[in-house]
Amino acid sequence: MKPVDVLIAISVAMIWGMGFIVAKAGMSHFSPILLMALRFSLTAFCMVWFFRPPPGIFKQLFWISLVSAALQYSLTFNGVRGIDASTAALLVQLEVPFGLILAWLVFGERISLKQGLGIAIAFTGAILIIGEPKLAGDLVYAFMVIGGAFTWAVGQIMIKKLGNIGGFRLITGVALFATPQLFVASFLFEQDQLEQIQSASTAAWAAVAYLGLVMTALAYALWYRLLGHYTINQVMPFLLLLPVTSVFGGIFFLDESLTTKIALGGGLAIIGVAMITIQQSPFRQRVSKSGRNIRQD
Figure 1: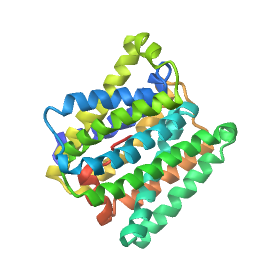
Figure 2: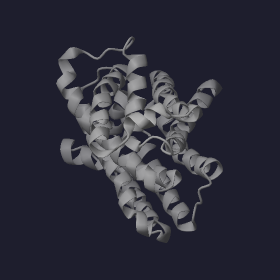
Figure 3: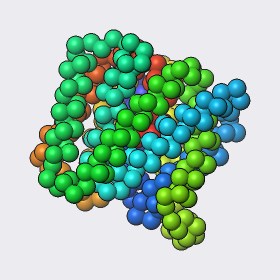
């Protein structure tokens, strides 16, 4: 890879990794689902002028958005609200083994011995993390994050069935449908939305801008540029920097602490994901091309 593209790949991982930190800070004012609704509103408004999804797949996009965005982000970021952002970023890595397992169950995709071992190591790391004593009273939040990772994987199966419509058109379509879905979910499960919007500080709106423009629009633009020039095996390993960025970001910007048990569990999770992603399966290659982390993250 060219040095400039290496820097771009590192930048994308860091942008996505810092997303958990920015979201955690943004939730000091906005409730989690409302924050995600505002995020996707901004993404949709800025991208719909340039990348419009084909009308013929609106029905599929509605359900994909409901699962992989509205439900997934509601689970993940309600979980992030209750535990450290760094811990959540480590647990979210389970989306990769979940995706591989679902691809095997649904499509009969082959799982190599190395990938199977990686799955086992990743789940062992997650077990160590949720066994950390300081999470004893917050396990519901940890399992929300894990549930979000599983829901993300389900969404990728749905995306694979949709076919390749182009990454930006897919992101735009998801944002368009996820926005009203998230606002409805916020109305049903949260309170004081208008008050939150009216009283939001510049810092709170900056968090929305980062999540909607930098983390989603800009980072995906850079990511798809890399995918257009290099193989999946060349660029995917850089995403292993994502949880590392979240961990250090949580420590330095949010004063979070990293216990030995969480560090060990997180290290195992990252090793397991590395064993899976560096030896790419066909499922992960096609999913990555059609739109990885309509989250992250």
